[in-house]
Length: 461
Image (cartoon, rainbow, N blue to C red):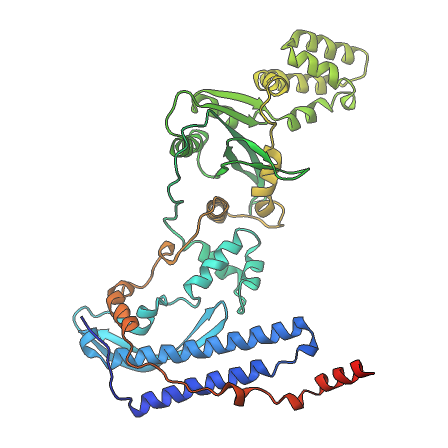
C-alpha cells in the first residue's frame, strides 16, 4: 500500500498554504462586506458570485496540490515520466471556469501520453466540460431546447452544438430493477403519438405508451396515475415497441394469465397491433377522439342518439340515421361515410368506452405533456439521430432515472489505472493545509455601516 506522508513542510508547501489562506481570507472579507440594504436579491446574487469564485480558485489550488503530489511520488506512477511541465488547461464547470496547470507524462512501456492529474480527478481527455456539469446539461436538454439548456445550466454558457454532442456521448443507461407487484388484477395502457417536424420538412411520429394501475384524485381538477411507467418509440416498428411494453409489464407485474390489460387509444393501427401481442387485452377507444369525430355530424347535435346506438352495439340503426341525415342535406355524404367508418372499424373499443367503468382515457393529455412539450411545441426541425437520442433520454428521466459518469463514453483509457492512487491520496494527503483565520479581524467594522446608523435615526424619529 502506498502512503503519502510528510512530516515536515517544504518551502513550496508552505507557500501553497499561504496562497490558500489568502484566497479564503479575501473571499470571507468579500462575503462579509456585502450590504443587505441593497436588497435581498442583490445580496444573494453577489454572494453566490463570490462563493463560485472561491470554489474555482480553491479547485485550482487543489489541482496544483495533487499534481505536485503525483510528481513527488514516482514509485506510485511506476513507468510514467514527465515530458512537459505546466501544461495549461481550462475546464467549464457548473460554478465557473477552472484554470490550472499540470504536468504531462509518458509511459515508457506502452508509449501512452496523459495528464495523470486529469486521470486522478476524472477530467476527460479533450473534454472542455466537467462530467457532472455535462450530465446536468444533458438532463436539461430533455426539457428545453439545446440553446436554452446550455445557457441556464450553470455559470458558464455552453453552445447548442456542444449540448447536442454531449447528449450523444451517453451510452448504456437503464432503469434500476423494480419491485414486482403480483397482487394487481388489472392495468391500463394509455397510447398515443406526437407528430414531430423533421429537418427535411416532413413529419414523423413519436409513439407513447404509459402503463399504470389506477387513478388517484390529486385535487379537484387533476388525477394522478398510480405506478406509472413510460415507454416511447421512434425507430422501432410496431411489434418491437409492443414487445418492449410487454417486457416492462412482466418486469413489474410478472408473467400472469389473470392480469387484464386495458389499452386506451385513438384506434391507430400501431395501437391495435398491441392487441395481438399483449395477452388478455381489452381495447378502449379514447372518448376525446370519439367525440371529436361525432362533432363533425351537425356539430354534435345527435351525439346522445349516436352514443346510445354505439352503447347498444346497434350499428345498423346508426347507419340508417346517418343515411337519413345525408338524404335531408343535414350532413355531407363524405363526412358521414368517414365518421361511420371510424366508429365501425373501432366498434369494440367504442362500445367498451361507453359501457365499461375504466376510469376514462387520458392519452391525449399525456402525449401533450410528456412528448409534445419538448418535440413539437418548440419550433425546430429534428434529425433522426437527435430525435431518437433525446426521446430515449427524456423517457429515462421521466421514469425517475439518474445518469452518472459511468454512463458517458470515456475517451481516456488512463482514467481507470489510477483509481488506487486516488484512493490512497484521499486517505492520506501529503499535507493538510493549515489556516488560522481571525474571523473578528476580517469582519467589517460596524461603525462604517452608515446605513445601519441612518436606520436607527429614522426609528428614533
